[in-house]
Structures are given as C-alpha cells and as structure tokens.
Figure (cartoon, rainbow, N blue to C red):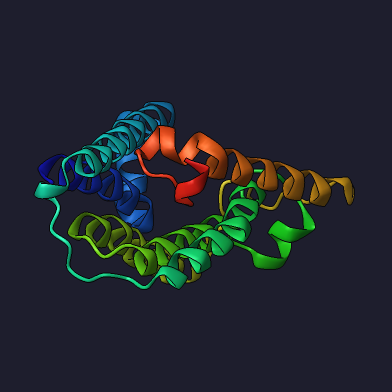
Length: 197
C-alpha cells in the first residue's frame, strides 16, 4: 500500500505545480524552462511507474488490500463501456481534432471517466486511493484550468482536416481493444472481463 501512496504523492504532487502559475514560473526562472520540463517529465514518469507497480503489487497480495465493499457485477460492465470514450478522449488530447476542440480538455475528461469507471467497479482500499485520488485531482485541475485559462498540451492547435477525427477514434478504439484483450491483464494483473483474461 505504501508504494502506491508514494507513487500518488509523487505523480500528483508534480502535477499540482502547473496549477500554480506563480510557482511554475518561479521554478522556470530559477532553473530554466528546459530543465523544468525535463525534471517534470522525469518525476511524472517515475511517479507513474511507482503507481503501477504499487497497484499491481496489491493485486498480487490481496491480504494487504482490504475490501471495503462488494460492487455489483453490473458496475464492471458500466466500467468497461465507459473506458471506450475515455480512450478516445485520451487520444484526442494529443491529436488536433474537432473532438478535442469540442470538449476543450479531453485529457481531464478522460481521467475523470477512467477514475469514476474504476471506482464504481472496485471496492478495495487500493482502488479507492488510486482512482479517488485521480478523480479528485482531475476535478481540481479542471477548476484550476478555467481560472488560469490554460489550453492544454496542444495550445490553440486546430485540425488540418476531418481525417484527424477519424484518426482519433480509430487509435482510441485500438487502444481500448489492446487493453481489453490482454493489455490490462499484463499491465495491472487484472482482466477487465475475466473470460477475456
């Protein structure tokens, strides 16, 4: 459990920095923009790896991860269904498209959808910590984005053609299928749909 908590503190702590323009700009002034980006990226990657390792470890040792409630089976079906738009929106956050323009901050919506889907389908403490933390952060960041007027990683980028919408959907569906048919099992140690594992 401690590994997961450390990963969450590191990853989400680093991502709190951009929500404070004064802090972010002060760090950039002191160490320079490129070193700031490099350190931000490195700490984010380390935090993410520690989160995945910590959560995976909890799946392998369920005795260290108490069950708080037993979600009904139908919540898993809802979670699996919600992950399709979450993956499409995740892809939309890095490819200029009309989808990205319409939703404005697809990464945050993808994170909220992902976190909510996993919260309703899992009743263990590790899931509550992981998905609850990400959901709370995404809600906070969305409020922060409105105040800061932040535009996301693509800035004002606009799609060059409607083909970008097709690319976003196709890549999102492919990512969803990869996770559903083995990727989630390999990465986390849990099959989203047991008979597919």
